[in-house]
Amino acid sequence: MKTISIRLKDSDYEKLDEMLDEMGQTKQTFYESYTKTVLRQRMIPFIITADNKSPFSKSEKLAAFDELENLIDKHSDEFKKDFDPQTEIERAIDEKYGRVD
Image (cartoon, rainbow, N blue to C red; front, side, top):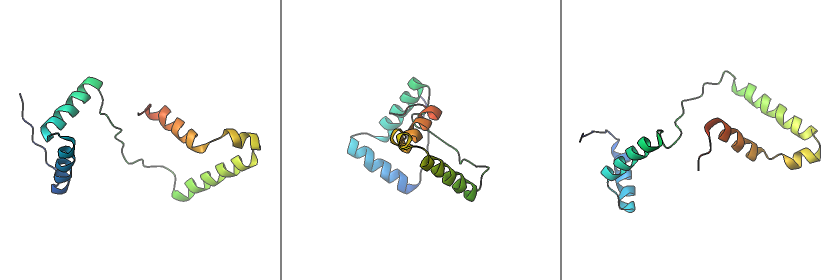
């Protein structure tokens, strides 16, 4: 059996301790459960991303968004009825990262 040492900010350590205490868990059982989940699923059980350095400026992004809104406004009411931006955003995220339940 191996021993590991982890450095955390004092405030994070206390918050984790408080939360785990409410769950009836110890830090040891938390880290053991986390490790077993990672090994079983062969993935980290949450999405980790890096800062997305976009090649577009903020004004270019806003202009593209305005253009998209104008295109939607120009389409028929039938298109607007069937188009839900939030559903499309969720579909795009699911397609890129996979379904997270």
